Image (cartoon, rainbow, N blue to C red; front, side):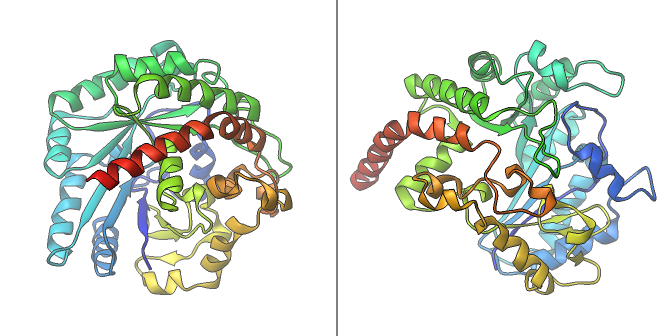
Length: 374
């Protein structure tokens, strides 16, 4: 079985306190201690055991909370262990998702040397970013994030931008796009919808609505399609093109089975997904179970199958091949146990696909023609 690891070495601990962060609730998962840090023993075991599995690429995705709370020495040890336990010819990839406020020159040099794919969380220009992304004192963090980005840049570390689209920012798609592309010189972007639902399907105040999401994506697409298709990579757009050209899904939300990852907590506990790190979904612990045992468990199988339990209306929707019913976390009533529900964003996705698919098809033809000539 091929899988990647989502690893939270500092659990949900973070030096910021963003308004929309769903990890604030996750902090209650391990209440026995206020400080959560992965031990050498857990890091050693997860590295050794994962690198012993047959994978096309062994992918370690370091996230939080804020993973840089672990400090520079931790990530130097990460790559030391990968060198020690990786088999001859093995392909290893490291991904780091950070708020960038703790980036140092020492760390940046290591990220460059070890070829970490680094993602920075940035919601746009200061007045938009600072509306929700604040520190524990309630102050905006944009200036500190930009200092971290400057550190990455002067150390020649390539980075992607991850933007969470919330109620504060959803009405400003072009301001955000122009700032990221022209102000930050970012060429790899990822836009994530901010949706948090309770068991009754009620959205949190900072969540966005379907029409807002559809309009945001359409505006970004128009701007990107006009002049940036060869210069700027947007993960959602890349995923749609790949689906049209190859039939393959590049991300889990577009697939039909939620078994592409394991989430590893700071203490070695393993869960099927970052959005579903719940006691009742715990699969085991890297110190006591093997990956084969956890992958073969009935709990993991049942979790993966939930992705295909979409709403009956999805069966006749022309866009099912792209969204596969959307992420279960976005399905109304999902936390109450009803996976067979419509996505909170369903109508927004329809607006977006109705508006953009003819142009995606044209881009796909260009991709096919280019491949045939080479």
